[in-house]
Image (cartoon, rainbow, N blue to C red; front, side, top):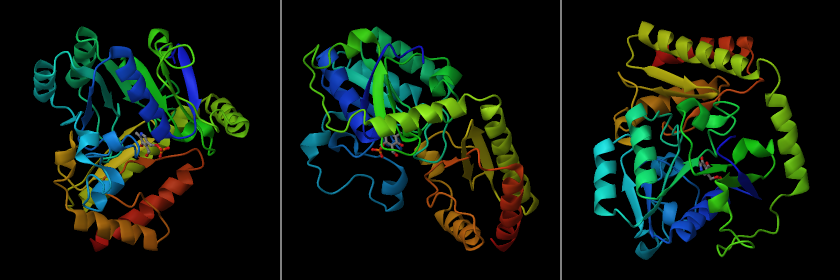
Length: 323
Ligand SMILES: Cc1ncc(COP(=O)(O)O)c(C=O)c1O
């Protein structure tokens, strides 16, 4: 990944993000961080605010056990809201250490960034010397071999990776510009360490995974299956007159019981949760285990053959008919 000049291995996505944030603060010597409503960046205190997915499903967007002081330097803005973004940089101009986002959000269902939003983000961070962090823990190697930053044509200053990079084993990491990474101990003064970091078994599994996904047509097949699934679901739902849309990027997909594809967490929340829940259980009862929340993206993997998708669509047809 061209944006990553230096990389450090850790054991979980939470650790990768937590360390990247500390590094951004250490590098800029600034306090505030900007995150977006509905983006999840792991369970460290300062980021567990308006964090989407499982937390939202339980109607508890933050968490017990986090003192107000721990989140007082975390500014939460609406995803894709360029006006709010400009405003935040005006108000906190020289105090924003970093902006962190899921470049394709997957923890509020799948939500894409608009071109204007992502371009504005990059230029504001550059202008104000704030570190732009792409949290690619979910999108990493899932949407493309070079991740979301390639598809969006944006070079973040730091990137966090996790989940699939360990091929099923506990592995994560963060990296980016050398100038920033050199602030990490032992070269620099930002402390970071971990007994299990770079665990050789996890790294071996991760390397094997990287080899597999570089095989010919790996991503083309993934994308073809995702298109088959999302087109199929949309056609079946519309045939029953159900308000429904679906979207996909690489191996990630989202579906929404809505007339439009949503562009923010608030837009996702307009869908009827009862309808999602009913659909989820109808699918589950027939052997299809979707993500158990309408605030989660879904993933296609290489074992999902055309036949598996076809079977899934047959079960979806029955489920839509019962909604
Ligand atoms: C975008 C994103 N960042 C960070 C994390 C945290 O990763 P972990 O669960 O490995 O701590 C997650 C986990 O779901 C995630 O989706």
